Amino acid sequence: MQHHGAFPTTRLRRTRQHAWLRRAVAETVLTPADLVWPLFVHDGKAPVAVPSMPGVERLSIDGVARAAEQAAALGIPAIALFPVVDAAHKSDDGRQAVDPENLACRTVRAVRRAIGDTVGIICDVALDPYTTHGHDGLLLDGRILNDETVEVLCRQAVVLAEAGCQVVAPSDMMDGRVGRIRWALDAAGRQDVCILSYAAKYASAFYGPFRDAVGSQQALGTARSLGVGDKQTYQMSPANGDEALREVALDVAEGADMVMVKPAGTALDIIHRVKREFGLPTFAYQVSGEYSMIQAAAAAGWLDGPKAAVESVLVIKRAGADGILTYFAPEIAKALR
Ligand code: PBG
Image 1 (cartoon, helix red, strand yellow):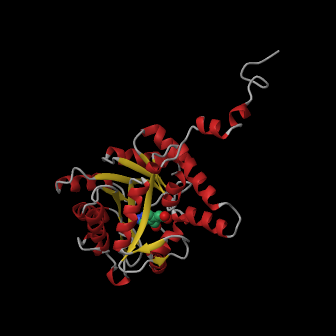
Image 2: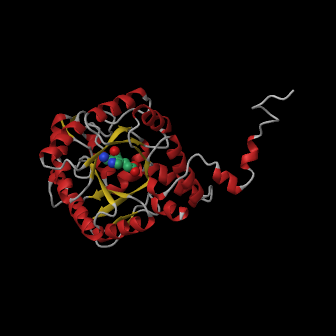
């Protein structure tokens, strides 16, 4: 007796036989439009390699403008900008963050001059590039201050918007910052500027290479002597999933246009739940450590780097992400052409 829907009537290998058929039945298709390219900018002329992120460089302002042109040519809709600030410009209170002449603002203006509106510029809102202790917020007596930090973040968001950044992305994980930033942007006449909230951001070991790149790792080392060498009092514990949904719910209520889950590869379940529960544009950040693991294994000859890169990003989309920040963005976009 034959059972419909069961073997031998049903053979799932049938649709896997031909490359064209595998392509035709693909449930998830990655396109360059799914990608956001994170870029590091520094105040030098020449590019400087990031040793713990093989293939990634800190670029000059002109270098970022050229990379943005490349992104446009590849069909990548946006870049995410991360300033590498000279030690001389860091301070305990990170006051450079609100200076309209800081590296991030100068880069935004230069890139917008060079490429107009062809590629979006997403800017982090957080104090870590600017603080001597490397924390995302103000540090006092071994504690990260919440409300005082939020006031500074609001000013940082406004100066970035004034420079021409179309999407501000608070990555600091202070409570209540999205609503306050929305209010501050609106008060400055910038109702047009989007907020992409790092809503569910985990305290993760996978940010290590990024902290090397922007020099906040060393700074956090000095913070350790002040009693707070990690970000666990504001970033989420990887143990928690329901809490991530509460974070997203609050940010949505406060006016976030889009939300982000980070890291991506260790939080595919969270990406899925967030997309399913809220249905709003959901981004995921394949962070530096995820990138470097693949690059290191590829360099050792242990896996096929380009294939692993595409697979790692494809499954983030399958989980529910509408957009993926990944250092592989240009390579993947080229491979997809
Ligand atoms: C800081 C920030 C971090 C990343 C993006 N914004 C690091 C951190 O929270 O310490 C990490 C990105 C990556 O690892 O690629 N606000």
